[in-house]
Image (cartoon, rainbow, N blue to C red):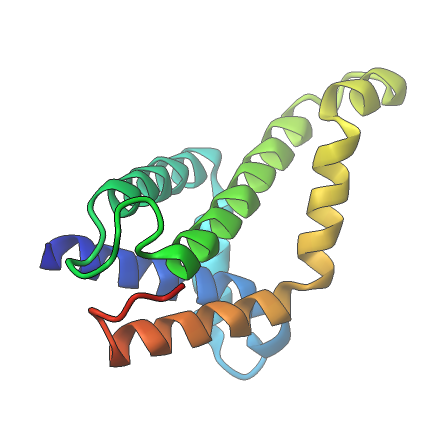
Length: 149
């Protein structure tokens, strides 16, 4: 399905733009604009979460033809899953900003320790994640029917 391939590539390119915006946004303004668009409103972030979830599910069950079902697009699925986790964390941050009236103790309990650790891990390795996804895009463009295991 060429349509799924195209949507996957566009989603991966958007994720690279979001992850590399902190490091190269001063040089390429389009990176900052893309990240701000994705993270600006919770409804837009929710739409991207739904889009990435659908793309992940479709890539699991309908990979590019030579790839086996469930593992045919492993690195692509890994990249999309990292982007999905990042988007969920951003949506959680939007919701926590709206609920600033809670005291700190109840906010700390409701947000969860695992979510904070995951957020800090992704934030510290944003540039590396961006380059990893760029490599996956490059390999996926050069060898679209190659199995990326």
